[in-house]
Length: 320
Image 1 (cartoon, rainbow, N blue to C red):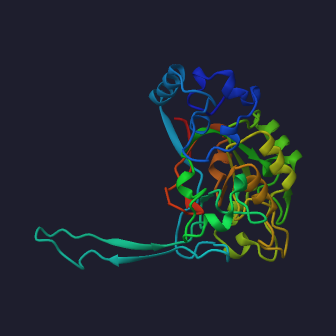
Image 2 (image 1 turned 90 degrees about the horizontal axis):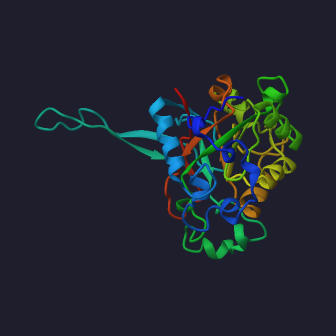
């Protein structure tokens, strides 16, 4: 199957078969400080002149971007666990005029860190009082923000992404409310895509649920539930040492009918136990409609010091 990666003309076996080597600590836990080459370099190793040449050659041939996130607007769907997004103009054109007739407008934005398309920092979830790596959560947050595992330590991601279209595997546009995505579902989606996620990759799971985003009640699924990744499926991704994973739902993981966010075992498994970043509220519809399965993804989190997450605008970079 042809790759959607614009560097495919010079791609090596490392890109098409990422599981060729054993996972390293730098891949399975890419934070612990600054970003590592294992995360930002799609070859999962040291940067080489050949990789740089391939990237530049791909860009020279022409690339385009496909948005993988949702827009931010007042009234958008938001979990009751987080303050919603609000924006208001604080200054309008004409409120003040410069001597040359010019004017400017500006706004105030208030939002939680886990509203809209975002990425979870490792400070977001603890278990038995411990963050990833055994860090004491109470001590880390004592100053009113996190001294360890804050959002400023989430590395920018420029790496390979694999789109696992579980809805397509089942022959539906949208998975049923509350459906649990299994390990076999992910394996079948990878087989359908013709590519397996591997060390340092970003695994994107499509349920089709983004199609309900315009209806906050349906999208949040408090009564009906929301489809999502199960613990066994998340374990399959963790075993493949992905750097990050994301889905087109409010919580990434399965939310059974009536359960809400009472327990989030997949968050614990990925964030706390494996140091794998989670992205939520993705919109994978255009990528799926175009048949994209393997591509370069660019994710640039805001460096929010001591924060537990960051808004993002993830994009797929594909050949023009």
